[in-house]
Length: 204
Image (cartoon, rainbow, N blue to C red):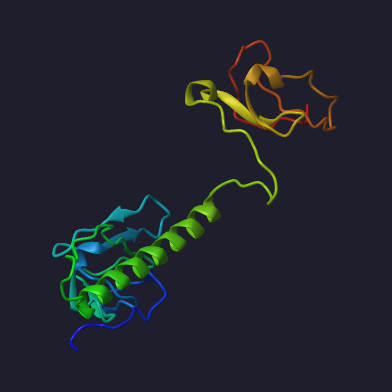
């Protein structure tokens, strides 16, 4: 047999630092085609990541299905800059099986490999989303956030039922506390309607 019989790797994501040498980096997961790879460059200054272009910013060599491929940056990486590799498999079925025809093992194995890779990617994306999203505890439910138009220039808070609401800044303007004390209030600019001065002004 000249094709992989299983997807033996469990990951679908890899981070690494290209560094100044631009040495080849092993890709520790399998993929059917280099077209399935997304490569993001994350700058060291914390700015937004940049989606890189194959054969312009990097090259892919080796055998992807057997997890024996490598990525090589075509330019030196900046200090502490790191790259993120993601596999996004094509979710499509291109191998029909005709009735009363041979049932080729290679076609079956390829289809099972695709299902395995897609399941791995969905698990990865679900875990990543769970790390970024605001969630309630298991067993609880919560209403959806207000519409975008109802959130503009408003503050997000939870009402007496624990449900999300958006109120104008003027709803939080309170009488200043005495000097040197903290009253727990969230103070806007008195008399300015729904404007906000950008500070949490508990001390008068």
